[in-house]
Length: 161
Ligand SMILES: Nc1ncnc2c1ncn2[C@@H]1O[C@H](COP(=O)(O)OP(=O)(O)OP(=O)(O)O)[C@@H](O)[C@H]1O
Ligand SMILES: O=P(O)(O)O[C@@H]1O[C@H]([C@H](O)CO)[C@@H](O)[C@H](O)[C@@H]1O
Image (cartoon, rainbow, N blue to C red; front, top):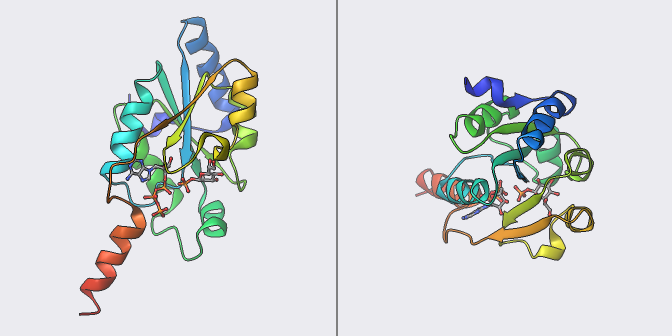
């Protein structure tokens, strides 16, 4: 499968979701900005995928990111989507333009909702809905020292010394 074929509009994902469910697959969902992909992202996404049978990643659009993190993203949404979709353990990428993925999570109704443990369960958008549907909400431990912000800061220092 080509990476671009893993990037779905939210309605276009529904038949694939139905097929996975008909095959008895547990659908894992996570979301994020994923501006500069780093080891922490890779580690947590791979672990998230192995909590179930298919991993759907909700990706904030450029507009959504810029409202959450002024001055960002550094990489546009199509670049970020293709990079995520190129990962073996990512089965689908869906962009969302809202401030939070709640509408997307409501549509997808994942069996398992995951974030890194920089978020408490109670701070994970959609946790009430997934739990109410009998699903699980889980966190994956952070890989210490890795963040997009750290990378940006290290690059900035290269040009200020
Ligand atoms: N070091 C890390 N180890 C594991 N998971 C991480 C790590 N950093 C971020 N994540 C997870 O990746 C997802 C996307 O987070 P995000 O795109 O904000 O990454 P980030 O590197 O923290 O970015 P920023 O520095 O801009 O906040 C979130 O679910 C977050 O929990
Ligand atoms: O990359 P981030 O900043 O970890 O992703 C954000 O996650 C928020 C999270 O789901 C809150 O529980 C979400 O609301 C926001 O839209 C970003 O995806």
